[in-house]
Image (cartoon, rainbow, N blue to C red; front, top):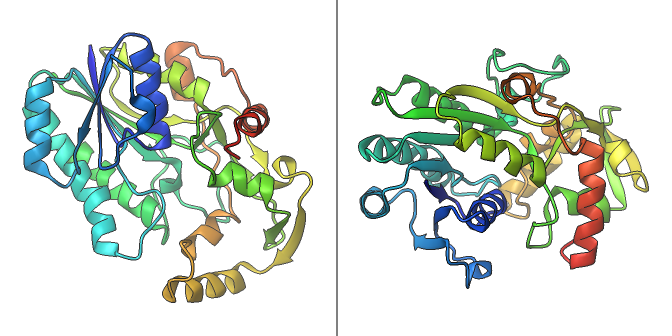
Length: 317
């Protein structure tokens, strides 16, 4: 087995690259930024490559001959250059599928999508299943994920290439190697907004559950299709940020403020993020749990507390 991981220097890419390489599995990491933590790891090979560079990526696939591909190269945080954002998220994903399909050694391609593609709506029910339609509203990341999923599902691929789409919630854990992120926001921000009178529902997938499930998936020669990747639990912002002061505000007001800051290039947050902070997206992992008889090691709250404790010890919070 040889696993090629795009976006290997991002948090999830790093976690999976480290997990499999430390097991003795050959891992090829593709990213535009090298990660210094890989020095001395004999089972990991880094290739500097932009997923928009189809020629370069094709050469790497041909040279490395991976059996599995895990596609994680995307921009979760939006940039003001919308064209570039689209090219990386959508065209890059199309390139990965096309090259994986043309590389006969590849037997499995795992596309990481996002639970955010379901959309943050007031009428969202708890435990959304994979059968629910994707309606990501104006959230650019979710829109791109829907486009990519549609492309992957309609693509005429070879019969012996299995494609797996994972709609993942936010992953957390002590391996996050830089300050910032949602855990830091919930922990270090003393004042939080309570938009439209709601404490938002959140699901967090602990990295130990992530690696355990991915280990099962890459060893599964028959798995194919779409699966939610999230724990069988959720918490609210109030339960997670217990010491914070929550200030009630209207969602429409916050969207106007954030839209102005975004337009003036004073914020890296788009108005759609305010909607996501108001209406929770809680997905059901039942389909994946039943397939493997899996029991989660961490609930959302337990995973959050473990992450906070260990990251404080490491100084990355």
